[in-house]
Image 1 (cartoon, rainbow, N blue to C red):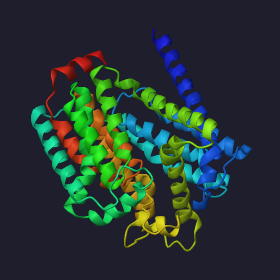
Image 2 (image 1 turned 90 degrees about the vertical axis):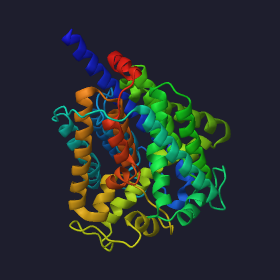
Image 3 (image 1 turned 30 degrees about the vertical axis):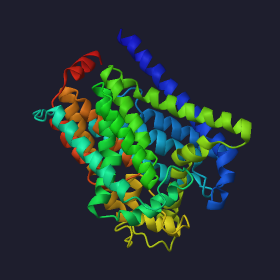
Length: 434
């Protein structure tokens, strides 16, 4: 039996490697067929299939596959899953998107991206179980979530900028005007972030877990409202994934979540190819896949130029670079070339750019502590809430600072609620099936 189990694990890992390689090639084909040309004005370059590029791609994808989970078994698995799919593999496929990259440079960049994930995975395997008292009744938590979501959405809609609407093309304009309507540091901005990044996905997860209709409907309405007000598309994606995790947990199949994510992404890629074959243009590629797979590598390439190539960047390995509006706006204006652009990148590169190596190491430490805690509590009672908190923190770290995701985006509040929340009977049945 053990031999059969070992063979199944080896087969599953080999299947993941093959899937990721095909996935990376699909990203390359999609980018070179449409996105490179349509975004050339912004500095996007054709990537191509040169031998050096392909060799680095294969090695990187195999490394990512060794880190990524075949099944979700603990909260920290979400970090390696999302960083593998949305950071490491896209950058490996498109690392020459901004300029040709030498092998030595690429290995440095790759190490910066991968090292924190490796440390988190090593630490998560060593933590003991941690037992906490369950004090909060689910109904009270649901009521609090609903109250904040309804109140925050109502305030945002009443104070929406003049560009508010449902047009995809004007979403960037709505984000720019939204910064003036809801200035950073004010309570309304914090509430908006907490709803879109934390509470709305939590409501969707709870609805999927407890077989409800009201909470997912509230989550979807919140996501649509903030798309109307601020042009935010990512929260809708978070809501859908959170609901999927809730349903999968209820049915005892949360371990198969990576398969669901791959299926969704492959579906989007195939839809873009069908569109492109008919009209030589794909809406799916331009508005969704570009944002998921092309923009992050392009932003990363500019951050790495700022960090390691530009002798006049003012960056220090000891202290980083202080800027009045923050490092993401500085890179957006001076490297991406557009004033007011918020060049969001993953938490670890953000820390390295803003605070140097000490900040990079501290951010890695914070993330290790958070996921070690989530894994420890999950190990003691298989809490679905810990799994959701791991999902939420991991997906936000792809494009947010670690402390911003914890505090401003409401992950810390979600962790507290999940730590103290009482179970319902449906959770016990789901966990027994898992």
